[in-house]
Image 1 (spheres, rainbow, N blue to C red):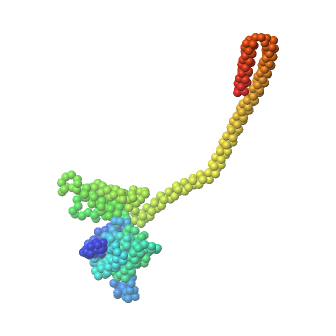
Image 2: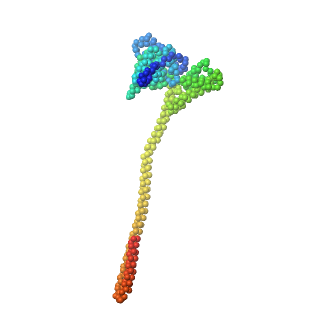
Image 3: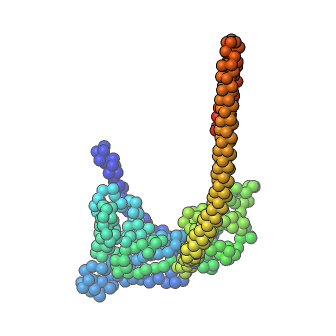
Length: 449
């Protein structure tokens, strides 16, 4: 298939690759071990193809039905259950080639190109009179978008529409194989003639699958190999058993000794399957929240069991969430009471604080009253002191007046001695001035106190 980006930028054209791979079928139904119900459905599908000419040509139904004459089959089931082998076996039984279509080869970067490639695939199948086989068909036949808002959605819907139209007009056999049949667009249900469910093999089928994976004459098996025990012990698909057999053979070749003497023992088969289980566990751990991923579901019933276990796990999570919601609801209902109790406590604290402040204010008021009384008492004492000092000053003034009068009399009586009189006058005035100054200082100190 041409590389559109390279053609766009460099103008070169690569050698065109075929959209389908033409296979000359070699495997038959003897190469696959299937449950009885699956094998019967395949036999019926094969008979429909073989009687196609009888119905539409000899019986004339082709003249009445110009479209819808093709035979489309849907092989649905877990990986490794034999869908591809059975498609090749059907082509082998019909003596036709098998055209294998892979969506990665049909899909194109350019809008409208994928639809053209789908139409070209059906033309090639008609030209070769081959059985057309769509592997991983859910990739190309997926559900159409009900609301188209993006270009890729429009392109995907166009591809499905073209596929439905070509399938309706195709006169040959078409086989779809898928692990996810639920992803198919509902319109394919009417156009697919038969749906065949490929279930996981049971223990007897698994024992046979272990056996057919080996060459009947060339593979050296030890005497301890027990295929029935392997079938009972490991629930696995045919593909898993194939991988386990190859791993067991590789392990046996690494044993010490001469290659001609080496054999595959039971322990090699068991170890090979354990490796396959471990690999599946690594892959499954990103897909499943629980489970060890050590065994595939047992057919459709196993799928629903796995789905039920997932639903149970989700139910438990929902119950846990419901319990937590209930607890949250109860806590929410309790919030008003908690707030009310908090308000009561706040009011009590406020009342207590108010009472304490009242007591402290009362004590402070008493202290201020005592201080005021003491100040008043001190003021009264100062007033009495002022009166005493005033009386003393008046008394000194009286004495000074008496002394002056007496000195005046003496001056008049003794006017002959002038110097003595002046000296006495000065002394008297000095004593009176000192007494007056002392009285004034005492009064000032009392008033300041």
